[in-house]
Amino acid sequence: MKHLLKIWTVNWIHFQNPTKDELLDIWEEYDLHEIIIDDIVDQTTQDKIDTYDNHIFMVLHFPKYDYVNKRYKSNEFSFILWKNYIVTITSLPSNNIEKIKAEYISETSDLEDPEKYKISPYYILYKVIDTMYDKTLDLLNKSNKDIMNLEENIFAQNWVNKKLLEEIMVKKRNLVFLKHTFIFQWEILWEMQKSIEKFYDWQLDLYFEDIIYKLDKVDNSITVLSKNVTSLTEVYNSLMSIKINSILARLTVFTLIIWTMTFIVWIYWMNVKLPMWEWENAFLIIVLSMVILSFSLWIIFKKRWWFE
Image 1 (cartoon, rainbow, N blue to C red):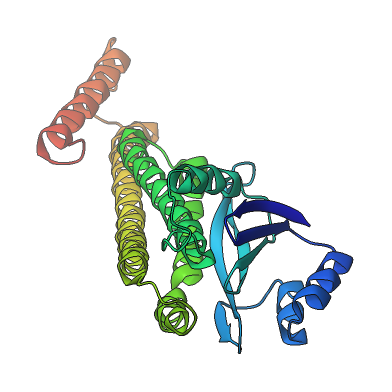
Image 2: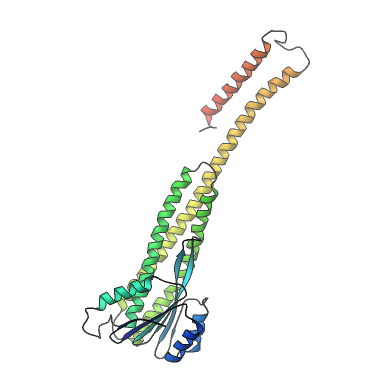
């Protein structure tokens, strides 16, 4: 157990991937329902909120980027709130917890009245969710820059680039994951706002409306980025089709030119009397004629459309 913070009457306790014994300690000390412990142990629990007689239990998921595998992982946040206590539990490490602690201490250090609205576990809950949404928006801004770089790289490529195509697919997969992560949080936030009113007298509506606004911003950003990646995929496919068609056109022209020379050679290969067959310089004349004809065909095709 990590007693992260104590200000006035408010206690903030945090766990990162707690052991079974630590969960049993929480269960016994705070007289929790066994369903809560089961939900914490089962890290596949969907976002949810349960309201009990004297506390609230809530589960939310936030993305954590794995820079090695270039993919997002789901970091499950569990919250248990009482009048003067908040327990936060994360399935993966989060550097933001210490950051939130420092900011919260800075905000409340000058408050003299312990009844101020910021001296409450519900305001700490707001700070945690707000910080995680800010972090997500930062990740989305970085993704937007990456997509812009991908767009530039697409037009700089002359051949099919497997690595570039892989990067596009990774972006698409990550955005689908993010969309799925936040899609269920709308109902949770609205329900949370209603539930907190039953336990806390001070009005925190403005703060929780702010995180609902940020969730909307996150959702819109994901939608826009998803459309951009889809458009990028279509542009990449179209561009590769154009390049392949251009290559095929060049091969067709090359084949036609070779066929023309082959046809001339085939004619003079026959054992019959043909024009110039008795000329001393017939071979050079025929070769020169083939070169001139081939060059003329190349000029004609180039001026028309094949090499544009």
